[in-house]
Length: 447
Figure 1 (cartoon, rainbow, N blue to C red):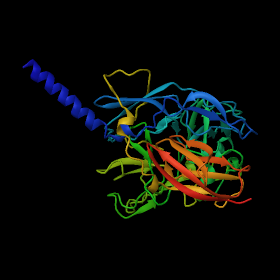
Figure 2: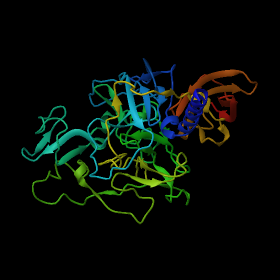
Figure 3: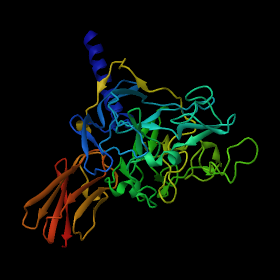
Figure 4: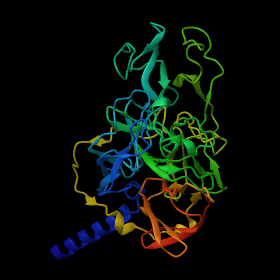
């Protein structure tokens, strides 16, 4: 009887393990134990190593939860932060605990909070729409944040007019639309490079190379890029037209719109603080009859590539020019049961998830790879559309097969460059390889 019990227990554990490793909450995280991050200092376009491991260092799971170990550093360079922010992205040495089967909140929705409200798959924090500054009607002035008096009730207190971080802090975002708060590097919005948007609203990528977690691709369903603090997944800007996974690919739209006026009464002056300055400048419009619009939480229940049976998920909304659109990711309330997911230790029996065991064959031919400009004279850019979830080795050969340049695009990066100012005119070959598979493209260099 004892042998039967032991055998059954082993079988059950094996089945549980196999089932669990198909759960995207376990398999989607970008893992790394060797590559360290980098940052830019203002005025210097050469990155400096921060000697901190990027992405997530370990993923382990139990029957009900997954634990993510991360230092909170992306593989794309951070900085510079040109609004006087004295911080750099620092090691967070964090553990996050997410449920494998998140549930809807059947009661009063929980409002998003200051600080972390989610984690991207590279271990970087997601913040909500606000920057911690508000309008105080008692003084008719801003409160909270640097240079302003404290808000009544202290930091994070409920205020009627909360300033929008995207508008207020844009000058301090790096090329990847992120910045640190006391060392905690985070995004409030879609974590793709500014100069990959159709309408570029920041010039910081002119000097500091464009990079981010992923590049928007309007022809494909956007990748799963993170999880909110209620446990539900967060996607990029594009999805299926219909919630059942049919109808082609479309930009998924926010149901919030800017009001035409704040009205009268004790409200902020539209002259001093134009519409869009505050979260309360937006109103929710119900588009429940249109499947490509999101609900008041900025999500919808739908089929995705990772969840063929459907799940509730959030989208990082953008407008028609790919500029971030309020409420940006999650909010202003959570759909599911909220919990602070940052924990001090792993308090369950777990299995470590080995990402290498699940690696699928690299389909490089079908990746959206752009090599530009072509022809070129001084540099070559190699860009991966969508999400890059594996390290790519990039080599530049002359027509005789001599290796001239070598670079790589790490997991969670989108772009790499070759300086070819000393390379002669002619036809050259760029080879991209990953996991034993490779593809090559021709490029013309003209001097």
